Structure formats: C-alpha cells, structure tokens
Length: 338
Image (cartoon, rainbow, N blue to C red):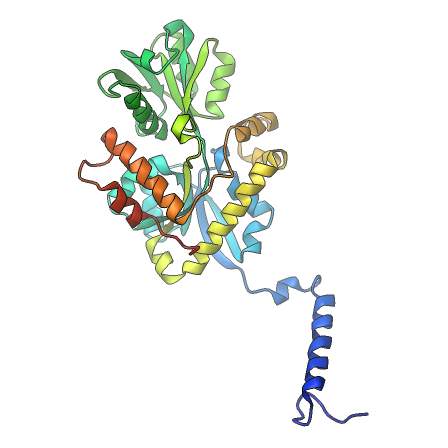
C-alpha cells in the first residue's frame, strides 16, 4: 500500500486526479441532503409591491416557487399601497431595495430626479377603458363632452388613456371630463348618469362589468401599437446599483423567470396569488389571461419603450415640454444584465 497522502509532495498528478474524482463523486452523492450547506448564503432583499394587483403575481410566484432562492436571494415582499411618489422615495432612501410597479405611474416622479433606476420588467397589460352603451360612449371619439370615472385622478389609466384620446383626435382635458369616485362606486356612477365611461384595472372593473349592464370595451394598454409594450417594471435604488449590481441582476433574472412561469402556468399562478385577493380562482385566471407575461424587456429594449412612453406623456403634458425622451430614457434605465 502506498504511504503517500494529499499532504505528501510525492503524490503524482494521477494520484491527485483520482483523489479529486473520488471527492467529486462523494460530493455528488451527498448533494441532495446538503445543498443548503454547499450553496452560497442567500442575499437579503426587500421588494415592494402592491398585493392588490393580480398583474404583479410574478412576485409571490417567485417567492413560493423558490425562484428567488434559486437566484441567491432571500426576498421579503413588502406590500405598499401608498402613492407612487412615496414608494419611489422609499426605494431612493434605502427603506426598500427595489419594487415592482407600473411604468405609467413612475415616469413623472422619475423626471423629478429621484435616485431610482428601471432595471427590468414583468409584463404588459393592466388597465382598461370601458364605455356605457346607454350613454352612447361606444368609441373613443364618442367620449367628446363626456365624463370618465376614475378611482384616482393621478391613475395610470387617466395618464395612458389621455394619450389614446389625444391620438383619436380629442383633447383629453377640454373635450373630456375626468371625475374621481370610490373604486366600488364606478359602476353606479354610470347608472346614475354621473359618468359615461370608466378607466380602471381588473379585478375591480371585472366585478363592475358583471353587475352593470351595457358596458362596452373601448381600449386597453395593449391596444393597437401598444400590443407588445410592457407596463409594469422593476425599479432599484441608485445606491444599491452602485454598491451591488450583481444583486440587482439576480432580482431581474428571478422576475423574468417567474413571469414566464405565470405565462405558462396560469392555473398554478392563480392558486399562489388567490390568498392576496377577494377574487375567485376563476377570476384570477381570467385576469392573468389578459396579460402578456412573456413581455419583460430590459436594457436597450426597455430603454426604447421608456422613450416611447416619454413621448406619449409629453403629448398630454404629463412630462415637461423641455424633457428630451431619448436622454430621459437613457438616464433612468440601467442594463444590469449586460
């Protein structure tokens, strides 16, 4: 028997290779039981989201399916239902590391200079505009002189559909009246003649349709030229990007993977998300079917979409006339996967 050992310099290269091979086999045989010990420690990260938004189901999917852990993250989901300005300020000040939210809400605060960057996205689709047949609002042009009900006068629906109304040849401020109502009273506003159309998101709008006869679909944020556009994005604080860009990249990869799972597995996704909502499993599945979770651009593709939306929002005076869409998009989008 040889008296050599791994500490003995007399070991040949062949001896070393044999020992390494044996160690590899031993490691593989014990991998199942010791994956946690072998893996790198998970990196903690706080991700803010709105738990009322079915469209953001990629977040709980990534959590429950172990997708965050697969990408080395220990994520805490923080339900944030406050204003978008408050949410972005929370990220900018480091109280949350990142967030999922709607680009239509984020563009204006980002113009104001908050230190938050767009690093990824999750899907397209979110908001709808419906008319009311008894009021004659069965097309965008028919909205002239009419009132559109919204639950928030700063809502993504108001901003986005102002653009579509403009492109239909109307002035969204002079030709249309926007009026705020409680979310659960939007349908009643139609029936009482206080409004003639609604801009809102599902599942609230879905519930309203079921109890209000005469509602007609007019447009969504997937209509026409927007069919392939994203709407909800991943934002991260500028300080975090400078200090730990790989961590942010891991988050983007995890959300991308979870978004594909949502697209491929609406039934399983509905079961995962259902505890967060009063909507039934069937309702959640229906809403998921209206979204495009395969649309999650990043880098140059996301920059182009932000530039496109910036031009739109300048058109309806959401952004300043002096804002350059190209420079703005390049400033607020960071490609962490490059």
